[in-house]
Every structure is written in structure tokens, then in C-alpha cells.
Length: 242
Ligand code: MN3
Image (cartoon, rainbow, N blue to C red; front, side, top):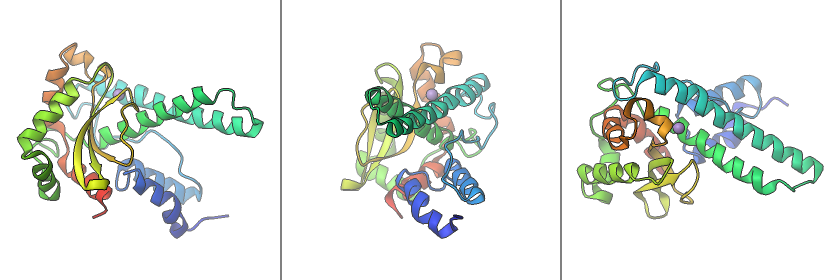
């Protein structure tokens, strides 16, 4: 049965909103392809809104190309494989591998979600990237961290000091209407239930090693030049529902 746009908005749309993807390239692509096909949105690698070399010199083109086309594609493939295996488990009523596939689902979904956000909240320095946040987002940063410099210092420290591979993240926490800075290990550990990531930096070595080698702190400091604050603000407003 062909689903209407309205039906789609009620089902997939609300799911995407709950995932904080509304307005993102990933969400737009999913919405568009689902409307065309009249089917459930397919998980797929989102296209970047800029060229692989557009974030130079802060993030080099080779790193961007491998990171997007190989690493992120790997998480997309892994997520699809996990969901297929779980569907087959249900069909066969054989859950002997449930622990393995449940972990794969969480890891690869985390990778897909966080990388989709990562591409979305970056832009070329001086052309959408860099500067400072404004508006409601800045008001919340001031309310919850004192001022932007405190926020930046804590985020830089949290990101630089993730143990092993992981992410520095800013979440919006609806429970008490505030922003919090968090770390995540790998793509999924240290998750905070009910809070919504609105920005984050990938600090896996694959995100910076070609250019920065072991100098993760230099990479984190340079990364502020490519943060797309309007995109972060949009994610914040989507998460907050305003
Ligand atoms: Mn990565």
C-alpha cells in the first residue's frame, strides 16, 4: 500500500525527530527516498554538504575521504548486517547469537548516528565554520556553563581525554532542560539515556592521525575552526522542540 506523506510524517517522521535528525541531510535524504518509494526509509551513507578538501587545513582531505567513504560506510554496512541477522533470528526462533548481534547493533548504530551528526555540524572555516554560537544556544551555554570560554575549555578537555577511541559530545537533556558535556567510548559506551547529542567531535585515531599523529589536543583545538554553529543551533532547537 502506498503510504501518504502524512502517514510517513506520523511514523518515520516522529522517529527521526526523536533521533534528533530532523533537518539534517540524513533525515532529508531518508524522507525524500521514502516518499519516492512509499517505503520505510533505508539506512544509507549521507552525502557531505562540502568537498573532502573543504575543511583544510584543519582536517585534511585524505582523512575526510577515508573517514566518510570507508569508516562511516562500514558502520552503515554493519548496522544493516546486524538488523538482518536479528530478523533472521526471529524468523528461525534462534537467539543463540543475541548477545553478539545486540552489541553489533548498538556499536554500528552509534557509528552511523554520530558520524552523520559529525558531518552535519562542520563547515569550511570562514564559510559557515568557526566563530561563536549565538541566540538561544548561546543563552543556554551561558546558563549551564557560565560563559562560552568555560564551555569551550570543558569540551576541549573532555574530548582530548577520552580513554581510547571515542567522542566528545554535547547533549541536550530534556529532563532538566540543560546542556551537558559528555564523553563516549567507541561509538556507544557511556550513553546517557533520554538526552540528545547536538554536537560532537570524533577522537578516534582515524579522525586525525594522518595529519596530527599522536597530537590529539592539536586536532581538537583546530576543530573549533570548522564547527558549524548554525547547524548545532538547529539540532539544539530540534531536540528542545522550539
Ligand atoms: Mn570516525
